[in-house]
Length: 475
Ligand code: G2I
Image 1 (cartoon, rainbow, N blue to C red):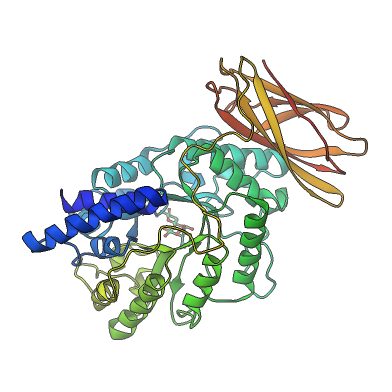
Image 2: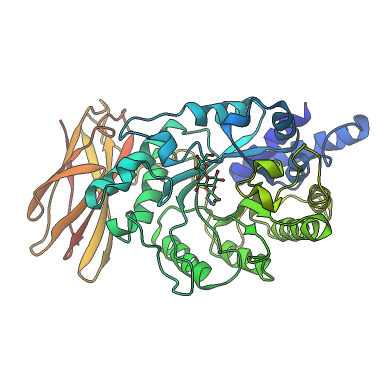
């Protein structure tokens, strides 16, 4: 068995269920033991990826597609890293330059390179106020909400099975002391836009971990407190969220916080994984090296800090190159920060993190296939179930449509709203009527379902929707 296949097995173990993980870990331990005894030149412990894998973590980097023809770059990439994130190529402006016309050419170059080299792929980012295509920047309200949900659905579906974790929503909270949401066109579609994006991502790729990702949340402060409250609320209400990404862009003005580890730990205590997603630390020499070691050690000290991604390879590849914030210099030489990072990864006991969540916490990784909440109908046709999130004066209804034994090429869901209730906003479906008897039809991308397959749409409303009973017909 090659070192690469051991590495892949361990990655699979980290992502899969506890039983498989235990088996793979046991097999891996035996093989590693053999390897150490008989192949002393094995790379474990001498590269960032191999050392992280020895601790059940990944070590990744941001990758730019246009650098994949640079052999100095790719030599380091494929020697050192076992996870990659597309630096820009999976963003909304790159993947959907015109509405509903998707371009995955550059993102695919990164994904294909990663798969050929045994690296996992983090998806970045599905919904973000920044780097939106011009057509989306000019949208608002229901049109933007639907466009965003369509984008999430299309991109996550296209990459289904190839992404270890998606940054579903990026940078949605405001800086400063207010502790609230960032104003943006997406935020103005309604406060529930984040959970709607997570639900759409889960429906599109149930096997990917779904992360919220942000910066200036690395220590306890008003912004991280607001993210914490959102994650706590999502966990309590069953909104699908598995992980929180801490970007960790540090410099003299924004140093590694003293409570970095404690802050990661409090999120883990909510039942989610944490990942360090865009690490770079401006500086040089010993100071920079020590800061890198602090960050790596903090992650290793937390069982469910599952991996670290640096935001580029050489200093010259960085979005802030003048701050020389990365692990390799412009010529590709290892810096002191590289050595301290590798040493931190190699120090301590080479134990795997527990593959089961801490006592009392529900598992966050969904099974690869999730059963529908009600069994699919025995015959042809379709069925619909509703889950309601209600508050005084309003609600969000999420309807799950499941195809019967013949599949669907289109569907319609009818329901009757109680008196006084009205639909104000719909996503992943078009509504006719807004009060009383209302009918929802599929949109272009979710009408076709195979037998037993499900899709979700939702609507927001005023008043109360308690007791609504959706019925589904094929069309
Ligand atoms: O700003 C640093 C990161 C903060 N968190 C989210 C990340 O997605 C973000 O990455 C940076 C990329 O490293 C830059 O490469 O995001 C920037 C855009 O917000 C990226 O910069 C863009 C430039 O603005 C564009 O002019 C340029 O065409 O990079 C593009 C591709 O080189």
